[in-house]
Image (tube, rainbow, N blue to C red; front, side, top):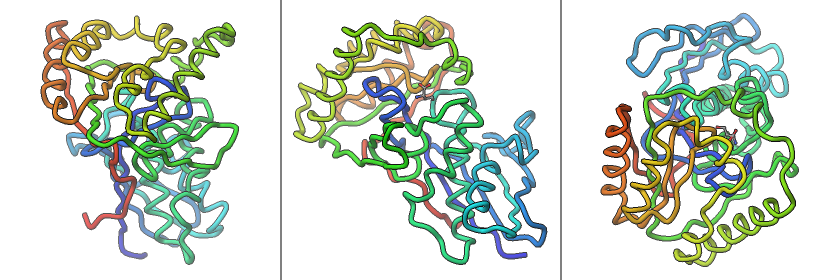
Length: 314
Ligand code: HSE
């Protein structure tokens, strides 16, 4: 048996309002940890899964066919380490079904840790297809908007049609992300299944325009254009009603000066982008609005350049 190696992978904001399934932003200060070591028996086993409280997780599975971390690790071994045996320990830091890329964070941390145990480790970007296998199991779809930012950090574009490409986008100076997690849960697989299968041409044209403008705003540091572009007119209207505090929290964000706000992934988390100087006040305003609705919550403030997954000491 080898020594344990440990990896941390951050939570992430999926879609970032304008780019359903193709735009994602890594978050600072919250993520999952996975420990891995080599063992003699080929394949991947999960020794334990611990929750945010450090206790053994009450229902996340240690069956290696049912855990996003082990599924991703096994996909990596199938391609680059046949015959190798790996044992994993998963430490959840991202709340489940939160819209913060919880399953992606576990899958990414697992492949980064296991990669370090291979004879010839791969470059970070090359790990994407394997982490996606874990994500696919959890969400039922092939979208990299959580996995890709968790893996490489920052703001990334990863359209399904170009996978496994990860396109790193420049981020404007002085803009931060605020993420509010209401104490609710949304099942991503279900939230995806019930989405309408077709979109009117005008909506498609308008959303394409908003995505393109948002990316142009990032590249040209045009914060006013970013504020005009950060809108989801296709998916958010189909999902926001399932998050009771959505209207109150987004109104509070707007009042506090947000450039824009929307669901993070399939929700229930809600994010806002804002000038960095407004971020703390924005987080308090969003929390206040959520609690006024009778829903407990937690928030994080992050730069738009949060680092991606990495090996850590402990
Ligand atoms: N893009 C995905 C969705 C992210 O919105 O369904 C899931 O967190």
